[in-house]
Length: 488
Image (spheres, rainbow, N blue to C red):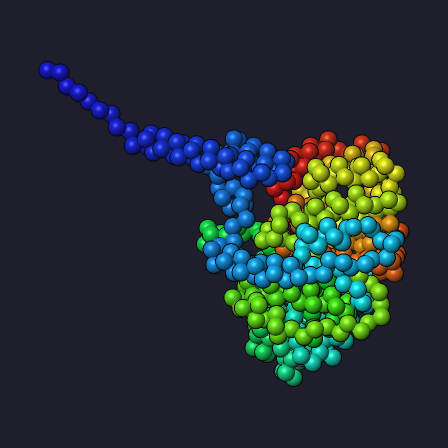
């Protein structure tokens, strides 16, 4: 008697099903990466992950590959952006800068970011945390109407506690106080004593870009609000690299400590632009009516006699892709005599690396100042892998020794400064929400250049000999880290 048997292996079928589904999804992701027209280095990095890491590559791309921010947040962003576009459409375009200042940079920046340069500003460089905390305390004590704070990191301890108590005191005397902090950067603060005390004391506290396991299913978890800005009474503003964290307490046990930062204090018409940026972020997170909030803002005093032109350059994945990277490329190309950078993290894109090499080779004195130690091994190794190309082209590379140099600054030909929160790495240039000031003023640029000189005096110049003496393991670590640099 002829019998038929069918050997059904359930586990085998499940394995084949997973393989087929994963293969189809990876093909779709590869097509998606190509379709998005990402920078070649970024696209190839993702394509390589898709080929080499079945399942895991798909998970990584779903988590970190797209600029997902959640349906509700994207709806608010689009509404805010529509209002910002209307504001940009009526911005004056005929600002007259002094003839010694960098050509038409301001026109290009206005096309990218929507804000025109405004004159009549008084701008002061606060060279360290001591000056910054002192000035902040003085201005908070004098506040009469509003205090608006936005920081990536707010950390309890030391002078940061004093600022928190002063804000509570201001709220209790009738000043409207608002604080916006990043969910990841300020995670300890959000769970700490001062956040609760400020909330109970009448300060409106809001967390930007909430994160978590469930949240990561609908929104990319590493999109961060990296801005550092303060607006007081719509008359005084602060922006720069310093978080609301006392370097004597914040990560004080890290081998890279202390954090070295600077802030700019501004009075004048450009405060209105800083306030607009703050309100745009506040309204996206709280759901408030952005257009209505703008009408509540008081026009800043425009009677200052200081001639500083200041232009606000807000950047992030909700605006134009790589807008701040384009701005930096233009700035590098505009330099005729000298360009000096300070940044804690240096992982340039190919286009930025080539722009720096080209600047040095055409005779521009090009100086890069970075910390000797940073708080990320991968970033440390990856940045070192670029130094040989820089040195051979004539770029001077200085390693700052006293701590983690966190100041993000660029000076160009003694005429123009770019100063703010942007690092020279893919995260700042394409993923984070950042704030940069373009300052067309010789006096401020000279004060910033003096500060850069102080950093240089406390640095060791990196040499090609030192580069060649690196251990083989460090060379390999740098080359491998550089491959994943576009995804960091």
